[in-house]
Image (tube, rainbow, N blue to C red; front, side):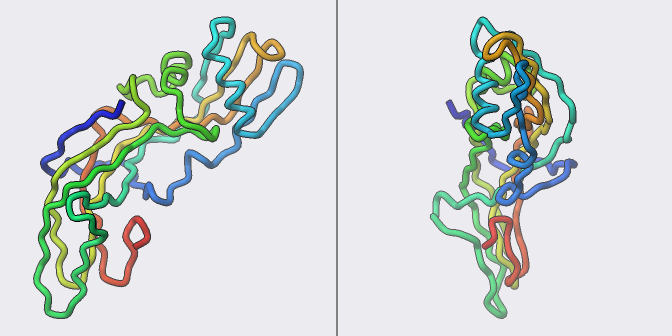
Length: 215
């Protein structure tokens, strides 16, 4: 279930480190692994996910420990103009005037983790407590929408950008019971949206340079 939030004006600027959501690979980086009590160690994402999913069963007890607080970032994406269906507003002609346009756009911000599948929010939050403070319980996505004005001056091109404050953690998970009697998962990376973390801004660059999305 996506949650729609009206955004009639740009939100306040974030003081967090800013990252380009189109190119950022923090969630997928790192090498999660699972070591079973019989000494078997597996490094494939699918194997780690299989071990983790055991935590959803009543016969298995799991506990998580944060081993690295990787910090909080504002993750930005260029948002398409859903009304006009256009890409960047380009004002690259000589002697042009400012171009001011009201853009209605949306972007879906998702929970992320580095085991190669969509995040099972019930498992991650309710069973393991990872990201429990994020305030989202029924959905792994958050939809931000809004109509926001953008002004592109001569010699520039630009798009509306949408961002969200995200919390990043690296977690180990201990498993008691289940396959081979138990296991230890190491290096599980999670990225969860923070409450009230929606942001709106303008991605404007000189003509000839690239926007966040590479255009």
